[in-house]
Each structure stands twice: as C-alpha cells, then as structure tokens.
Length: 238
Image 1 (cartoon, one colour):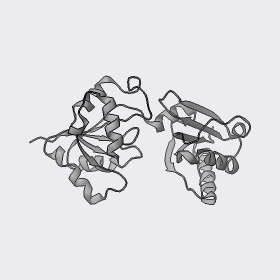
Image 2 (cartoon, helix red, strand yellow):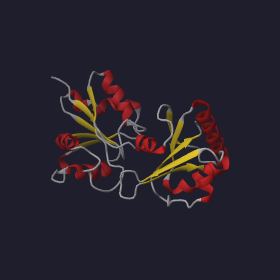
Image 3 (cartoon, one colour):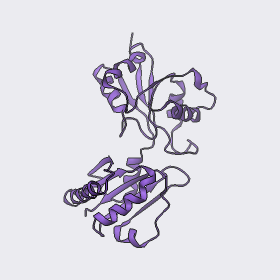
Image 4 (cartoon, helix red, strand yellow):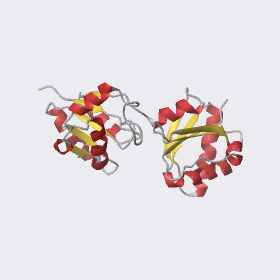
C-alpha cells in the first residue's frame, strides 16, 4: 500500500474572509482531508469550518500536536499516513512548521519516506519582513524574548549589535498584553537611529504596519497594541 501525503495547511491570522488570503485550490485540498494533526482542536474546528462551511466537522479525525507532545508520541501521528490516508497539519495561526511544533512531525515524515506538501498561505513572519523595509537578504526570527527586564534589555542590545554588524533584520514577538512594555524596553535599550517595525493584525481589516526610527517611536503617537497580535522587526543595518 502506498503512503498518504502530509499536507501543511495554512490557517488565517485573524478573523475575516478567506477569499483574499487563501487560493481556492488550497481550500479544496483542505476540504477533502479527513485526518488532521492540530495544535488545538477547538481552534482547528473553527478554522476548518471557514474552509468549507458545508463540512460535518464532527466526522473529522483529529490528533493533537503541541508543545506538550512528547517525542515518543510523534510516531503514532503517522499511522493514518502509513495506512494510505492523507493527513493535514494545521497550527494555531499561519503556516505549520514555522515557529511551530509541526516541524517535528515533518522531519519524521521525511525519515519514513512520506511525501510532504506545503500549501500556500499567510506567514506573519514573512509578511512583516516584506513590509518592514529591513534586510530581506539576512534575517532571523527569535520567537519570544526574555520577560524579566534586565535579560530582556541585554538581549535587545545583542540583537541590535548583530543587526548592525551583519546587516540583518531581527524579528520577534511578544504576548499581546505585553506589547507596549516591549516597545518601552526597546526605547530604553536601543539607539534612536535603529528602525523598529510593528506589524499588527496582519491580513485582517485592522492591519497596521508602522516602520520608523526609535526616536520617532518616542515622540509620535503609538498605535493601539493592547492585546493585539503583532510582529516586531528590529533593524540597525545599512
């Protein structure tokens, strides 16, 4: 028996119509998959209902893959694929395998000779980088920075030095209720000439991208970031 295909299915970054962010063939592929590996079942059901409103979501087979999944549990997630069924992977938001535990399953699928197909969809990391005006030739995504003030400031200074030395864009995120505190930390730790881009609510009706030197972040009105998903891009290069 031939193996099934592992499809990496993008999810919306926020509320709204899928028509402008996902091609019809991506939605068509997702609508025929019955077996799913998901980061959160409740969220996944809501996403998949948007993909195909006519679907009977209760008939889908879902298995969890998140930060609590142990490495020894990954092999069991491949069982439907080994039995010939296609499987879709969907994460909380954006593209599976990018800053997401789906990468572990993808690696194991390749080791077993299973075909892996990434589908087109929104990535907040790439969208923010595209809109930042920072270096698109060299960039790094760091996820979350330290929460405590002293190590966070030291980390920000380190990222700024690397950005200037390597002409490299530095991308990171924060828990939404701490967005303003992160900007305050940036203003204290980094030079005024360093560029900061904040990309908020990407692909939604409330999308906002602002890119300006930190000196202007000190004086200009700050956008509403309270409890809003945002991507930060720090750039001290050319």
